Amino acid sequence: MTCAELNGGPAVATYLCHDGRFRAFGLDALSIDGGQVAEVTTFGLPEVLET
Image (cartoon, rainbow, N blue to C red):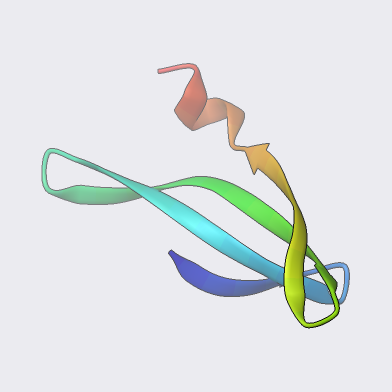
């Protein structure tokens, strides 16, 4: 996982390790409420998910 920003809000980029190489897998947008994660919206990368 790597910290990221999506539309001005916090997000996390996720990676998948295959054959010793890391490939981008998706992006998770985080909704924060009261200093805690209230919701996670996941955006998968189609070119990775279809393989």
